[in-house]
Each structure stands twice: as structure tokens, then as C-alpha cells.
Amino acid sequence: MFKIGCHLSASKGFLNMGKEAVSIGANTFQFFTRNPRGGKAKPIDKKDIEDFIAFATEHNFAKILAHAPYTLNACSADAGIREFAFNTMKDDIARMEHIPGNLYNFHPGSHVGQGIEKGIELISDMLNRILTPDITTTILLETMAGKGSEVGSRLQELREIIDRVELKDKMGVCLDTCHINDAGYDVVGNLDGVLEEFDKVIGIEKLCAIHINDSKNPFESHKDRHEKIGEGHIGTEAFERIINHPKLKDLPFLLETPNELDGYAEEIRLLKSLYK
Ligand code: FE
Ligand code: FE
Ligand code: ZN
Image 1 (cartoon, rainbow, N blue to C red):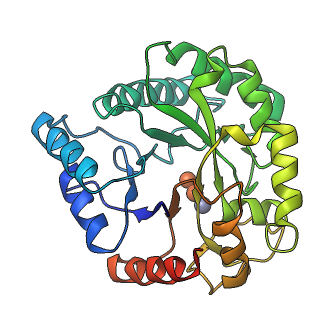
Image 2 (image 1 turned 90 degrees about the vertical axis):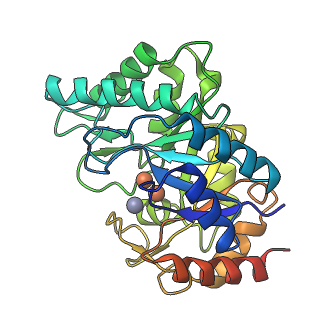
């Protein structure tokens, strides 16, 4: 089954996101757990969640992906910002447990001049304070483009974070095609090589989701500007290889391209036509 979806607005609740996903031919989706710039999450609506779970089961949904706010920085130099990151992630995961067994993705963080090693230490320390054996949500580190002092643009850095986390079975990785191409992993010319390296450094079994985005910028640009599928430097042919690669084809693919709903529907139609 091709697991395909896109980023949706969470403002109208889970059941509505489910219906919106079906209306554009999707069987999964991503959403922000709260305003992407931070702030308070909406109260849990148990009825909405119950209805969504029934709807998702009926429509054979794949796992859904919650995305942490961009302002969450587990390795800030500012203790107050780290505390916000801790509280936000702890609350986000507790909320995700109402829809057991799904995925929660976050940007590892920016070390803001403290150095990659310090960043890795702070991120893994936070995860160790948050993760408990009973959680059913898998926490995903997103591969980053390497803008500014971002941690996670090298696969080795993600590996080092996971290495320091005690409950490793709760951890996974979300590969963003725009980010990883911007970071200097050649998913266009050498997809096999990139995935072999992923397997060697992290272990391919840790790969749980793909953010499927084209890039406005060339290889190794470290920019992080998403483009519509086929309109950027990655291109349609590379996406055809990505969605059909034996190591990737069963993962959920989530679009985060600059689109509204009708644009997403079109991209989903295109990708479905390329999926074998
Ligand atoms: Fe992201
Ligand atoms: Fe992404
Ligand atoms: Zn991005």
C-alpha cells in the first residue's frame, strides 16, 4: 500500500484532518501539535479522537505524523528555551498517547554556538528525561539541511543522539528529501549510496517516515526552502526512484511543499501515478 499524505492544518480537529486527507487521495497526514511558533495546544477532544480512530481504521490509514513546533529547541544555550522544549515535547507526547502507536517528529535543534557535541548532549539528555517505557509513540529526529547551527544535518549526529538515549526502541528518524539534498547527500544521483550510508551509520530499521519535498536550492546549499514536487532541484525522476525504492516504498511519505489542498491533491495524483 502506498502511504501518502501531506501537512494539514490541525485547527478543525482530527476527524476533519482525516476527512480532508481522504478528499485529496491521502491515507495519512502530518499536523502541528500546536502553533508552529509555539504556544498552548488546544484541549484534548476525546470524542473527536474516538471518531478519528474509527474513521482512520475504516479508511485503512497509515500511521500519522505529529510535528513539533519550530520554536522547540532542545539544545538552546538559554535554559528557559530548553525548559519550554522539555515541557512542550512532554505534553505533545502525552497528547499523542490518546492516539496510540503513531509518530512524533521534531527538529533536533540549533546549538547556537555551543558546538555540535554540546548540542547532541543536551538533546539526548532531554529525551532521557521525557521518554518512559510505556509510551507507544515513536519519536523521530528529522534530518536537517544544516542551516545556521542546526544539529542533525549529518547522519552521524543523529546516530550519536540515539546512542545516548536509553530507550532507543522509542526513537526513529524522519528523512526530509529537501533537507538531506541541501545537506549534501545525493538523493538524486546516488540514492542507493545514501541509503547504504544511512543503514551503516544509523540502521535502516530506524527510518520511519519520509518528508517528500523538492528543493528550491541546489545540492549542498544548506538552505531549507521546499519546492513543489518536480519544480525544484530534485526533480520528478528522482522522486519516482525514491518512492519506489525497496528500502523506502513501504514508509509513509508526507508532503510539505508550498501548496494548498488542491495543489497537494495534484501532487498526490502525480506520485500515485509513479508508484509501482
Ligand atoms: Fe520539519
Ligand atoms: Fe521536513
Ligand atoms: Zn524544511
